[in-house]
Image (cartoon, rainbow, N blue to C red; front, top):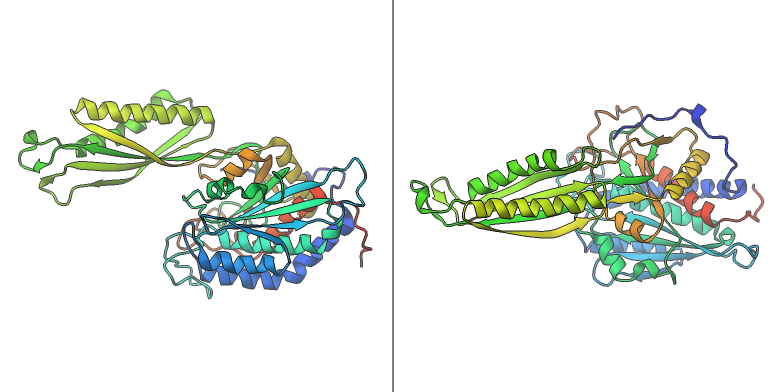
Length: 432
């Protein structure tokens, strides 16, 4: 990921989008609640849960939205929920102003990783919020409190989308299939989400780009069926191990020979399982590949070619293989107009913070499914501690990843401002 962080001199001289008094009230709410938000973040960090259930986490975060009196709908099959905040300014809105609906999202799951940060609030249960989802949750709670404090000024509603299972479990898909995108009565008009980074970007940076932002991600599980035997007589067996090895090598060759350099794809074999000891030829061998692409065309082409390659290599050795495709995330694609809107809002509240990204990143996100249904933008927020070298700081998914508390109120105000700018009229409350 490459970018050049802008200086304050690069701030565009555009008309302000958010009413000044409304902005002050959002800022005041976030400031007043920051200590509580950080306590919540530490509590969530100390009690991480993985996967799709998240019984404790979802219940704990749900209480924050219940305390605001919001309309809550639980997911049927997974441990997620949505909450709806109804704005109160519809009656005073001008006739040409339609009532809007904005979705704000946070993911709630952690990773199966033993934490090594040494923080006072570090997890001790064998899981870790090593991707910063504890900050996402606390930030969204802060945004909800801020928007609740100005609800009478909002010409429309906000759908808070809290999902499990982002880390490889496709939690967003279960939420969407359960109808939760329409929990406010219809599909939202705009969708926004943020993701924090523990490295890479200097403290305070907000980064994004229009178009492809993150890669698609597919898993291919390839099982080669051979014939077991004694290691001393491979000619009497059909050894699947060299076939799997050939598949790994040739998959990398396939990329360089068949894909467009300017429409990149990445193939990685991260798991190989075969046999039990050195002198036994196993009956079968299994390899697990992850495949990433940045366009639908590139993704479909490489998946088809890989399946064909694996099947033909197995057949060339007189064996057969099975190719399963258990998991897939689409490419995360930002709407160009929504990304420009997010840039303008960011520059209003955090002058000089916006960093336009030259290239997308190879990580994947199931917020991509939300953006397939609703125009929106996904933003990266640096959570690198002030004074830390972002280039050398441990990155997300590291057992040493450390995310600064400063990113929590920053994310809360950014999310609240995005929604309030889309929905807000003129604040009727005089500034104090």
